[in-house]
Amino acid sequence: MRKSYIVGVREVHYRFFSVVADDAIHAKDLVRQRAEGVVDMEIEEYSHELATETWCVEEARDGHNQPEPAK
Image 1: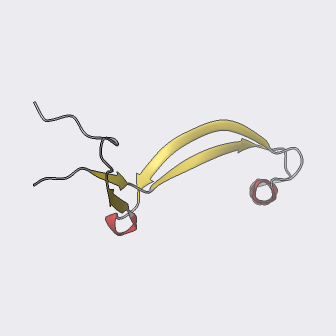
Image 2: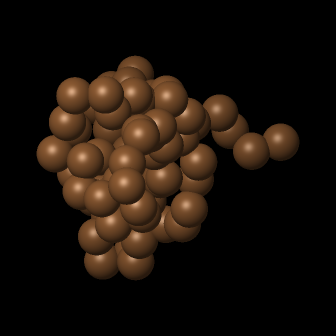
């Protein structure tokens, strides 16, 4: 008998911040610290999926996220 599963796929995203700094290295350091003046631009961009070894999978509970039958 087939069962339903929920698979958690780990992904990498870029999140963008704006900051005034002396140079690129200083800008990275300020963002790393989330220093005063760092502005989260609330923009994210998909980069890639991590290897399947990092994913998680669990059997779905009854009625929880049951996939639609294939047509």
